[in-house]
Image 1: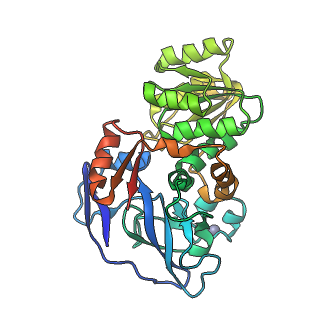
Image 2 (image 1 turned 45 degrees about the horizontal axis):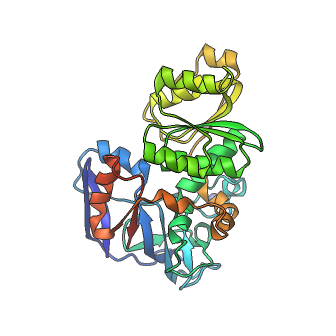
Image 3 (image 1 turned 180 degrees about the vertical axis):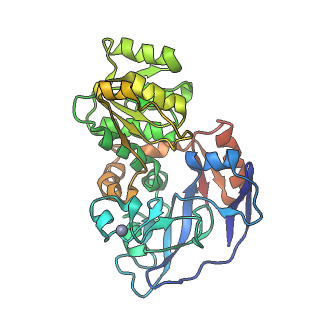
Length: 344
Ligand SMILES: [Zn+2]
């Protein structure tokens, strides 16, 4: 099969790899129909040291089940399925708490002999707990929107849920990337009345307005924080979702939170120290968020895609075939594309 492999910063290649086979009775083989490039793939694309081995890439995909191991029930060959961005048994104590990201028998795509999602086939471990059947055909126009259940939409939703977004709230979302815009969709869906989106790419913040943002703040740093405070009677907002991952973004998140407020962090942090000293203590701020247990949210969010209430498929602004995956990385790294869809 053909699949995308990263060999170092800026070096993604599509190459021939062994076809995956069932190894455990809990495995399934999925023929990938749609995959995509994640904002988090851009961090290794910017900084990964060169290796000879390479790392299979991609953790967001949907496709058709080709084959299942003897212990897999619930999904069958021919089913159209989506995967959350990590695999999990969905039965252990962490999974039972809705924290499938911490599954005791789970893991990540592209590591430990498991294929990445940017390829023709993937061996999915713990298939019964991981894969969710989609009630559509493999040529459904809803597939791009349903693919966002793999990661971005569930991640944005996780931000809104952990921030405690409820009906009537005012929320600040920091970042106009695919996760930030998904957080706007999620906050709106949970009833937020006012959503302030901080981002400086006009085409992206326009999409954010379509998704439910009521205000856009293009300024960054001190100026941006002052703008948000101006918009909120001087205080900032009680709920803040940080969807970038830089030190400046987390500083901004604390800066626009009202005392007693909650900051939910979704961006993969590119820093190891943050503003959690006496100032934060005195302000009674809560820091929450984290890597989303996407598997916990898929069934809840899917009906809203199927009935057209939300359309996260609009996040994809470029579609490429598998062989052009390296161009997809480049386009996203250069901010030429918001999110690149790979049609296998
Ligand atoms: Zn588990």
